[in-house]
Length: 171
Image (cartoon, rainbow, N blue to C red; front, side, top):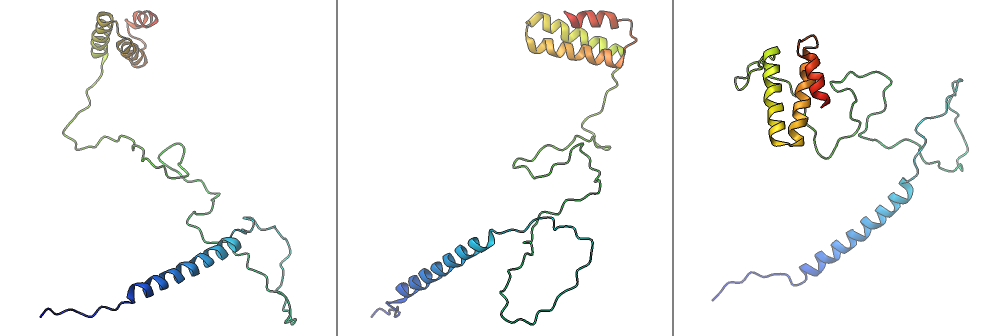
């Protein structure tokens, strides 16, 4: 003899009926909200110089005027004060793809160290890059050579080789 638990036959239709009624009520409320909620007041109220005192009305048949209170928003109001940021131009809205943060070298990082770039290392870098550019005849290596020449001219403008670097950059 198998024991079966009694299941109500009409539970599913009743639950579907309740769900249908709640969907209809929600739809009606949404339509009313959209119809009444699209009216937004002006962002800046007109400037008045005189203070207005509240007027008490004894007329009970006056029509009800809807409130012109602006809706709450997560966006902060515009500020007239200057905000100092790390970037030259602040981002007003968030982007979908986050951007890279500026590279700030850590003080206790043992993975790298900045090498001094003196005149000898500049000459060596120019020699290596220009030789490879001439050997491979590749535009990317010519760009790298021009970059190395520009950097050397920027850092060492009074060098003996500065005139030769300018001539080499022109060709």
